[in-house]
Every structure is written in structure tokens, then in C-alpha cells.
Amino acid sequence: MQLKQAGNFILNKLQKELPAHLLYHGINHTTDVYRATERIAKGEGISSYEQKLVLAAALFHDAGFIKKRDGHELESCVIARRYLPAYNYQPAEIELICGMIMATKIPQSPHTRLEEILCDADLDYLGRDDFFLLSNTLYLELHAECLVKNEKEWNMQQEDFMENHRYFTATSVKLRQPKKEQYIRLVKSKI
Image (cartoon, rainbow, N blue to C red; front, side, top):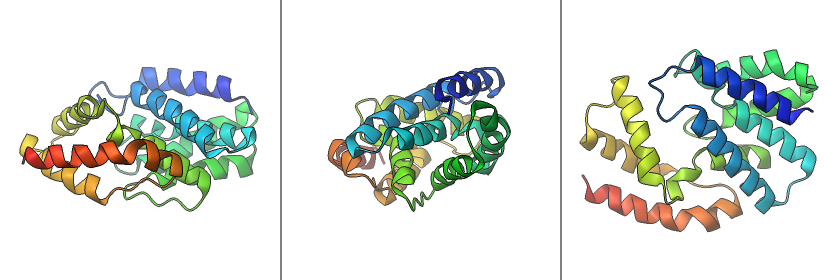
């Protein structure tokens, strides 16, 4: 598996083809999820082979945004199936990667440890110091697509989402859950 080369390819593709209004779901989100995946994978003690699989999933998990928002996970799998064979990923490995990608669909539904790692990496920011900064980029993105009307509606959606979200890995529960709880209280206070 040529992870570095596959990563360079998909990041270049995202840079060129993602719509400009995607302030949250842009290349920065992909690289952020990649770094979070590395950290969580290390914390969970998975093998280097499994790390290559979940890191590839992190790189491709939102590639479908090139085409559309709704159903982007399926589009991401189409892209992964199309391009990963050129980087020595076997069909069974690509299907594992697609399973991880599909698990990130909201509400998240991981069934394996690798799926749990990717799900936690995808929403790692909910318990980080840059939560409000990243949350604001998501608000601006959704507002640009008329998917949220104003900040009050956004905060109500965000409160509901965060209260129903849960981290799956012990690494993320320990590292991110306490701060996420603080942010839920802060978001509630804005409503």
C-alpha cells in the first residue's frame, strides 16, 4: 500500500475540485482528520498495517464532497474504489476502507475498531481548543448552502448534535469528552 502517494493524489484532487464555499469540509478538515487518526490509532495500539488502512480512509473519507453533500460518503467510496488500486490497495482492503468511510455517516455507526477510530477522528474537534473556530466554519458553510438560517438555529442544532454524539475509543473519551461537555454547556448558554 502506497499511503503517501495515495495521500498526495487525493489531497491534490481535493485542492483542485472541492467547491470554494466548503469552509469546513475542505482540505484542512481532511488533513486535520488524518492527524487525529494518527494520534488515536497510536493511542489504541493498532498494528502498522491497520494504521495504513485507517489513514487511507481518513484521506478519502470526505472526497465525495467534490460531487455532493448528501450521500458524499458513498461518493467517497466510489472515488476510493476508482483510485486506490493504482496505489497497491487490494479489493478487500478497499472494502475495509469503504466500511470505515460509511461509518462516519451521521449518525455514526461504527462496527469495528478501525471504524471507531475514524469516527472519533472525524469529530475530534468537538472536544478540542479550536472547537469554536472550526464550528464557526461549519456554520458559515451550512449557512452558504441555506441549510441553517441563523446562529440561534445553528446553536440549537449544535447542542442537539453534541448531546447525541459519543466518542467510541478509550483514547478519545479520555482526551476529548471532558472538554466537549464544557462546550455543550457554553453552546446551551448561547441559546
